[in-house]
Amino acid sequence: MRLKQISVFLENTPGHLEKVCQALADGNINLSTITIAETRDYGIVRAIVDKPEEAEKILRDKGFFAKLVDVLAVEVSDTPGSLSKILSRAAMAGINIEYMYAMTRPMHDNPVMIMAVKNIDAAESILSESAKAPLV
Amino acid sequence: MAQNWNDKNGDFHPASAMDFLPVEELRRIQSQRLVALVKHAYDNVPLHRKRMDELGVKPEDIKSIDDIVKLPFTQKTDLRDTYPYGMFAVPMGEIVRLHASSGTTGKPIVVGYTEEDMEVWNASVMRCLLMFGVRRGDFIQNSFGYGLFTGGLGLHGGAEKLGCTVIPASGGNTERQLMIMRDFGATVVSCTPSYFVHVIEESHKYGIDMKKLPLRIGVFGAEPWSEKMRRFVQDNTNMEAFDIYGLSEIAGPGVGGECPEHNGIHILEDNFYPEILDPETGKPLPDGEVGELVITTLAKRAMPILRYRTHDLTSIIAEKCPCGRTVRRIRRIERRSDDMFIIRGVNVFPSQIEAALMRVEESTPHYRILLERKKDLDTVTVEVEVSESTFSDGVSQLENVRKRIQASIMNIVGIRIEVRIVEPHKIARSEGKVKRVFDYRNI
Image 1 (cartoon, each protein chain N blue to C red):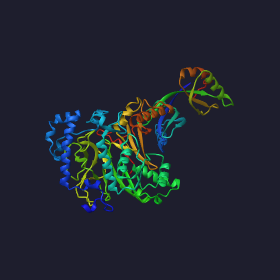
Image 2: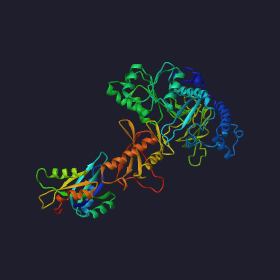
Image 3: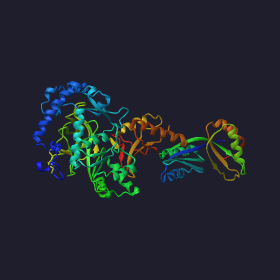
Image 4: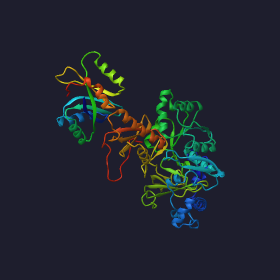
């Protein structure tokens, strides 16, 4: 299934990530998962939250550069080889995964992989079999 | 006066005579040269003729050096717009040398010299070297870049004319520079001051004790520097550091230099006539007041320049110099009226950075330029704010934009400049003139 991920541009300097998290906390936004892609000078914070549209507005109001991006959420059973099975299906269909990170959910045994792909419509139908369970 | 032809040991060198002329005699020569220059420029350079006609000034109206204020200005853009040879006043057959300025938008500024111009230029550099105490018998390691840049060959010509042993080391390759310095026995080094500071820092790495070398004089120019850098050089070597001033539009190095008083730069005003003007109104300012330096090439044939606006801010020191020279002094140039900065000997204007940014679709007009000194080398970083079109969630897209901006700047400015993408609204917005250049070099 599809989720809206919030991506935030951040300078690679102390205190900036804290400001983002504080802004979200003040807006009563819950983080399900968060990850950072970093370069020497800046990073991109990617997060799955309970209220993405609100989160985007809060961060923009605070002067951050935030953007909502469609990503795929694919449930992966907590057993050896299950991720590899999903990925080989993606590979056979010629789907390139730009980046990927994991999210756990309370009350669920299986984790969910968050994946960014170029052609999300095609990818969703191919990988959807493993994305039936309710998510966030 | 005569006891002080050459500051240090008083030995007479006839080439320095022009530095010490009685003022009336100097003015007479300047007047004579100005009259000839204006006629030559009016008759042979369409741009000068057009500008003078617009002001209603005829060559006959110029009778003495005091009439210089009647003449039109020449701007850097004039030299660029007439690329490559539009400002030349003699047939190409008389041009024996071409040089070109570095780091200008798209096209460089081309300057030409006749054989006579080369004589004047070499003699001017020689007079500066004499002022610094350089003599026949000195080994001068010339580490200014050789090529289209006027620094390398300009210094070379003057040093050779003086009778020094010239080591044309050119720029770069610090290890080799140090080896040559030690093994060839250089007594004088000429280069940009920031580069020499770097050489000193590196010398420990190669086990060379700068104080054990026979070096005694440093000739530094092509970029602004400070007393702090002079102290650093003098504390870490047995050298005395001198400032040489020049700009390629006028001649190259040798427009002026510091005498051993180290209090201002003597402009060789029999060849290069200085005026200080209010940069806003263009009106002359009294001696001592800070304004824009404007120079007229009194002795140039190939490319006569009337009242060139240098955009360098300085003032004329009216008091007589204790060294005995009568050619006037200007204070060290520390600021410019147009935000231009000099980095590794290349002139860069913020407008060029802006032009480079404009060529990259996704970049924003919100940028600032940071000048820093890292490990004794000057670095430039351009900070550009992230924008809607730059930011698309992926690092690779952002990096792609960053690299394209960098390539675009390289293309226009000619040097590699770091580009950093920063958070939005980090760069102050301002209603009036936006401050673009932040100089943290602390020179």
